[in-house]
Image 1 (cartoon, rainbow, N blue to C red):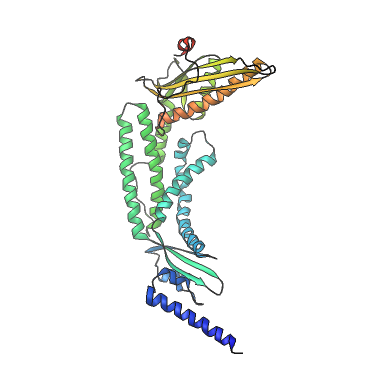
Image 2 (image 1 turned 60 degrees about the vertical axis):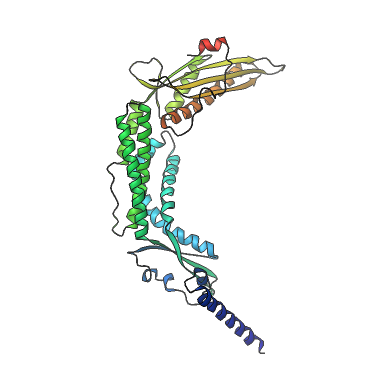
Length: 383
């Protein structure tokens, strides 16, 4: 009959030993000791403002059935404070993303916005700390308190805004000094992108500051984005010239692919449009002799290069080839032509965008693999 009392006594002694270990050996401020909670919860669970006044801190409380889950929920609670401010201002940045993702769907533009906002929020949350933890034995629930010091976060955000302002000033200044149209586009685009990122950081700063005030920029993301859109539409024209087999069809498909990317194009030699870049290339369709009694095969190939019209410098190349087969040579030719159109138009569009925006290292003419055979007929056709 004395056994239950002895078990109860042992549990009491064990709790006392653990508590003494935390206080005496580690110290009462060690966060791990906070998980050994009693029945009475700490005050911050019901009234976090008593210990962490809102004028100095942003806080978030999380709860879960394990320690890490509670901490993650606490971080998420702080993140939601910033997300609400960003979502409220997202429409203000729409024109930038219309230029950034020209021809893209609304979902893709939304994804671009979320990418930028995630960069900002991740940086802000670097300053968040789990300051308090507690385990409710009665309910078997873990609690965590995430705290963001407003003054520290403000200093960090101001540093980032200053760095972005310096880059924006340099890019916009260079875009207006240079006579190179490609450099103008690259710098305007970098400035617009950094301005969009700056706006998100500024939205975070409004949350961090008790006054709700941000730091104004001398430039507006919508104005710079519209300037970039106008320049792309009127000043950065791409001339296209394709020769060879079915050249007219291939050239039209290539021009349509570039238009879908938001690039203004013209056929080479067209009047009234001064092209900054020239796309020139050759296409060929060649019957393939194979010992197949049922199928006929046609090989296609295309070599296209992007050239700076003013300097004549080759900016990038696309060399591709393929093979299609069918019961008749005519149908095989139709399939090969369709495959060639799809590959060349999409890849050259990407090449043009990379050439204009300078985001990727482009292959040099010396490193390219030939799509078409380099015989005398090729040399005669290649512009």
